[in-house]
Image 1: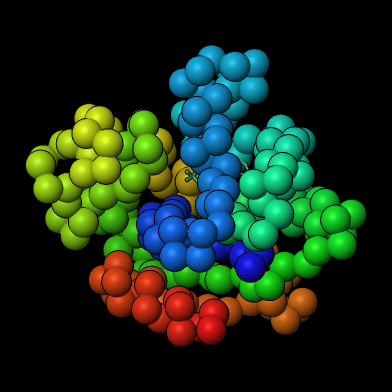
Image 2: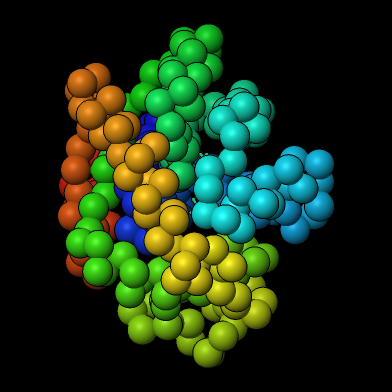
Length: 213
Ligand code: AMP
């Protein structure tokens, strides 16, 4: 199963990708997580990416494509993957097609998650994540059992720097300008399925599984 989860920031695609990856035993590749790890570890790539991420801009295509290529070519992805947050531009999508073609593989489906804009802002402002195991929570809708502590690994939950209101606005306009064109891009290839992401996590997961089966 080779899937792309597409949609604006805060739509819930990371949470859905995590659940589905567990169910199907395939890896979830989140470029946001990979980049945050690189920033935290102060690798050369992380140092290059940090400024773009702090401003809510996209990291240059070549940097992100290199990162994804390495993962997709690893054994971990042999039986499939869920790409969360990649591709985010048309050149990234073109590059993905050629990486997969070189492995004689194709995409099975692109799931476009959407919710109303007001809900995006509410979701992002309440989002908390685990820097260690990457689990994602929401202070109201998906709270951890103990406030501020990850249920899975016990680490302290944090709010992402780029989830603060000013940066969220730039991320949303970057999404509209650079990523939303991918909706038509994949529609024209007959790969796109749309999913209303505004329900509760388990309801959306149920719809997603029904859509894929
Ligand atoms: P995310 O966790 O997917 O919201 O990504 C957080 C930030 O990482 C984004 O705002 C971008 O700065 C950067 N990023 C993640 N994925 C990509 C990508 N495919 N292309 C460019 N930048 C990305």
